[in-house]
Length: 104
Image 1 (spheres, rainbow, N blue to C red):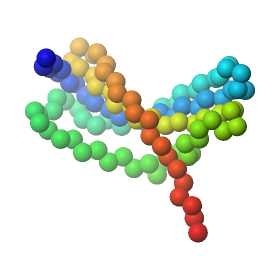
Image 2 (image 1 turned 120 degrees about the vertical axis):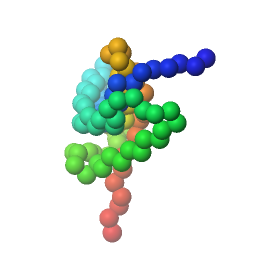
Image 3 (image 1 turned 180 degrees about the vertical axis):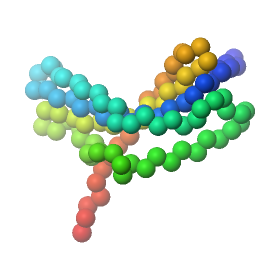
């Protein structure tokens, strides 16, 4: 099955998801979109490769924390959004892991 989507534009978002709770199952989740980066405006040509380089130095990022003492977690996601000519939105989300390199 071949699907043809007439893409109007494409964007890449960086999302920080903070999850805090007391370990009893009542968690509070906070999503924050750190940036929206427009990759392309208009439809791509068939078999076109779109290279993307997104520098992270301009954003306030912390390392990814996973279940610290059953109290909180911090996760980051790249969210690819395609918008077609009829304003329908298509999403693909991928978790990314950020860490700090030990100094010294």
